[in-house]
Length: 47
Image (cartoon, rainbow, N blue to C red):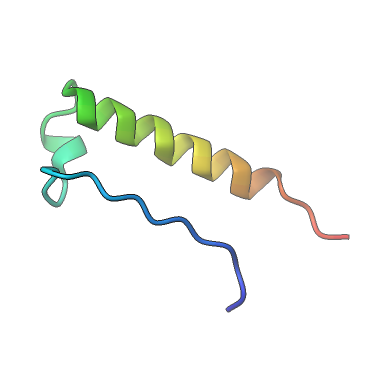
């Protein structure tokens, strides 16, 4: 589709880890990265 993407790997993080143990350090880091990626994607404008 020609859109930029990001791929993040969280060693030791199983599917849904951020929902099951939201207070874990890895979960908090993942959530911050999710939010940051969404903000970057939504701030881009086409001219």
